[in-house]
Image (spheres, rainbow, N blue to C red):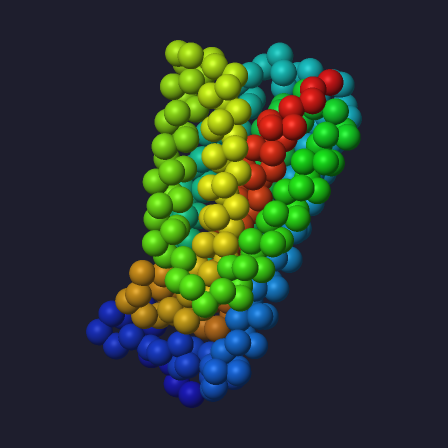
Length: 261
């Protein structure tokens, strides 16, 4: 099968079946392809979480490293700023980046998250950290499964959840700068749990939607020259979205449990 010489051309868009001749021959093949790509998404996300955990616990385990970071807040600020930059590049430039570069940026982001997260985890007991992780994993798994199997279109819910997320971010900054109210912080954390649980289901379904939008003009379209490139881009973007949901859900639950060292 011949590919369009210019796969990014908008004049002659290719149907996903043109790019995935071995996967998209039938509805059964489409479902099988979706399962394969979702598996890649969750494997990448799991590996990224392992990278984050290794970096965080390596720093916490070293008094020299953790005290250096705690005494030099510029390290955390720089890491956080670079994190934001990486997320912006990946979110808005993912489909233009080479697949290998996108993959490298994703794991670099996971390592940076480990640095920033170590400062938070240092103030909590090991028991509560593992308890928060366990609760997060169960809630995340349940909503990821729901997002995978549901026939309901979650697009509208996703938009509402994003607006709610912006709202709690603003509320968090206002509370931090002006009120420092513990009850408001607890309320924001509970709302955050609801938001990130919902976003997990939405983003899982969005990944499935991206798979059927390769080289089209749809909202969640993915532009790629080869099947392997499309698969890698979708799996990296999907892994990043779900990874962010998992980390934020974990932090909200950790704050709710709240037993410090």
